[in-house]
Length: 247
Length: 211
Ligand code: HEM
Ligand code: SF4
Ligand code: FES
Image (tube, rainbow over all chains, first blue to last red; front, side, top):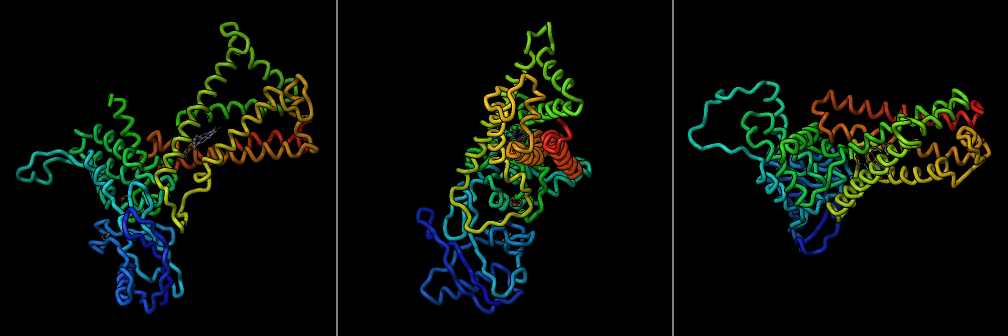
């Protein structure tokens, strides 16, 4: 198929960017979205233009590195990551607008690549449990009720891609935050640091300049891992509990 | 946001109940309005209860609007560079119109107080009977007044539809898929009950059912 691509080009964080238009021919339906960008880059290398910079790593939907705004939808029209999106989701003659995640907490480094260090700093404020290292304990050493284990596993699938922030009209990272809070809060190992975790992670979230959640729900529609909105309710509940405990 | 919003929900339901007394006739309606002023006497002074309610509501409006504008500002600075293409996936229209809808409601509340409380604006009649002021106001030749009230009620319904659901989320009540459905249903029901309940009054006057 033949595509018209409008792609955000920006040489670095300090420079101004703009959408530039490219034509790409002979794209097969079986091509993945990132392979399509690879094709474009080969074409650009043949001319004088710099290739389009974009992020990717696993290309199998598990690492969360890829992720761009495609025609105004985070990760494009399907419920999956950008790397797992295929060109069969588009038609011959389509114009596709490709932009980086837009959030001031995720500054553009170059073209479609943004700096998601803000997520790492939020995790550093409590998205972990403290344990003494040594030999690994037996898997069944601490019993976890099935209900809690299921919920923890479901939300532990968050890959930190940032699509929720990109899709949120408020630029809030509450779905990501809620996924981490719920994941660790459902498990016995997460209890010791439960109160300080939520307080510190929310403080870091606000400090990074993410917006406040107003429960609009665009995040969960964009999430490739279908993290449900109830993690945000859980986040609020944990925050209230921590405040009641005097934190 | 959630707590002040829920104060409004309680107020709006009580206010709607009072308005529906219009269907019980002039005496019943005017008596109710009068009674509100004597409520709690002699422990409270005349209009004491009313003023307590007014102070609580004013504080709630201030708190609610302050939080709203703060969220608004945070959202504006969280994404200064906008998308050139944007497609809405599944959020409701109500959720996306909370801010301008809220401002519309605030403007309406000011108008409404000038109309029926302070009697600064007196379309139709400036009688001492609240019933007469109301009925004279919503006559067909003043269709524009009915329209203002109906537009405000649509705005209120939409604000409540998302607001009730959002408050449940904020308060941490919706931790399962079933409770999320219930919170959404509560939002929709309350929105319809309140918008229709209030709208019955001006519409009934307009069509001469109440005169
Ligand atoms: C002063 C005018 C008002 C403004 C500027 C305003 C604005 C807002 C905004 C921006 C939100 C939160 C954002 C969101 O959840 O999307 C909100 C939430 C809400 N509003 Fe209002 N509003 C106003 C009046 C009212 C009135 C008159 C009522 C009730 C009759 C009301 C009930 C609610 C409720 C229950 C919420 C949910 C709180 C939450 O998100 O936890 N508001 N309002
Ligand atoms: S919650 Fe979903 S959209 Fe947000 S970072 Fe995690 S996987 Fe990505
Ligand atoms: S490259 Fe790893 S999820 Fe897309």
